[in-house]
Picture (cartoon, helix red, strand yellow):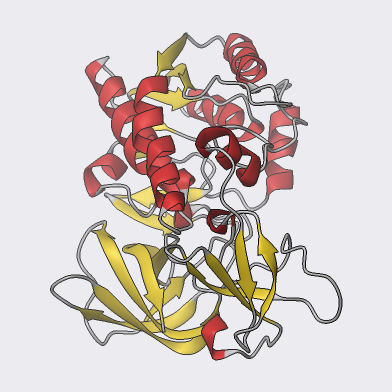
Length: 351
């Protein structure tokens, strides 16, 4: 037996196949359902019961012990409240990244180790070796962006069974081959903890209706009203409800004055950044070397852009080889050296 591993089973095909592969590889596998969020929202039933049932069914199919870890209280404090506080001050935070940092690869890991596990495992598309984090083999599904705030120690106790799989279709094919009931289950969408409900609806439910304010264009001319500045992200095009003519893009927000600034000019300098100020820095192994060329991703689906890192006393400045559109405060910039994840930080501003 290779060791005891607790697999986070969410009820989806990725974690289901991960558990199956680890058992086949000779690990002593226990399936764990993390109960992080169970609240329904107006017009939307939280799918946690269905996900729990699917995870348990797969565990039974595989002959695995199955446990539930109730992290709902900690999840609310560490992830949901963090997200809400960010939105209230005009940021666009990423709850998936904080969930990985605080819940899956800290609280879950600590609880698993305390219960006698040697490792934890998840269905993420990423690779780890000797405490280092690497991109997954399938670059179109690579999830290392969401994992950059994991510690070296956590990575030494983590397995990513899907890291070397080359496509989602291969995952479903392998799950079907093993008869797993989740093989054709659709991927979850939307906010990580409430399924397919939209972020705006969630914010309204948690924070209430927001005060309306002015939308101002690049000529400093008021052209409409927004229904709450917190709902808008830099670079956003949809949902502005401004009629006629060319599309508008959000360039800035003034939370104190409750103004959303927009432009019709895709070349507007306020939409583009050549350098980024970072705060909340996190290096997995070692800090980056100044003046060495790395690659940075400012969004999950973004391409990596060559950059150089300038380390300061209060943060980091990234100087990029090309301009990046719609750098959004509160999002993460993740720094790579090829496939190796160095770390990153929270975007403070672009310029």
